[in-house]
Image (cartoon, rainbow, N blue to C red; front, side):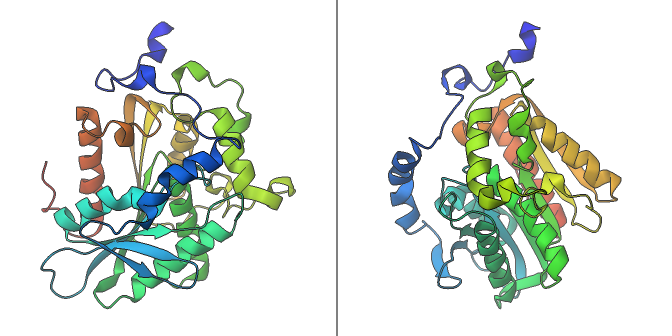
Length: 308
């Protein structure tokens, strides 16, 4: 039905946006355009070194006393573009409104650095955060958008496996979880914006690298393939109905619940991929962001700090 392809009325840019954003030909240009933001000092934050490969952009709450909760944020970009500066706005908001130390991790990108390099970098950032003297290591959450949501989900799997740092919450915004979505020919491109099947195929092929031809794709690379989700931290998953990842995110939420993991599923009718980043001022985007903050605040033990 035609109504199936109507975007949310508050998302007025939807009809002007592309369906495909990045491919092998545009990869270098997009990276050059966004590189300056990665080098710039974050307003109200600092850039701190984790090791010889990894840095984090850190935002600390003003006037905090004692140890406070921590958040590791993982940026999106299909595993091939983007940088930690993309998390500045959200991390600053989390620090200011929730009193949480928020760090956005600068991980290496595919295809030059395929799995497991980006995940290893994110795990290094998580361990660094847990070691900081002003952080309560028992109250650390992970969050991510798109590919960053996939990496955040994978981080909880890796943390469960290594048992060094145990995040208490995972906040996943339209996470990129399952490489098999690229092969779903029934997905109608008319309802997609900002991320297409073609984008998805390029992103996953770049990220998986040699693992793409393996007999079995590792669950740490594509969490949607993980058979055992038991024992993971509670989750919040947000996704729009016009997002390529809608079906895989719904399935992942259902599988988390079936495994005994508390999971809040937040669906946004008529919203496209990355709608809250492209149109942050839209009412539906503000409501979405407040829902994220409320979920984080409740999970980290201070549900009274969120305001609209």
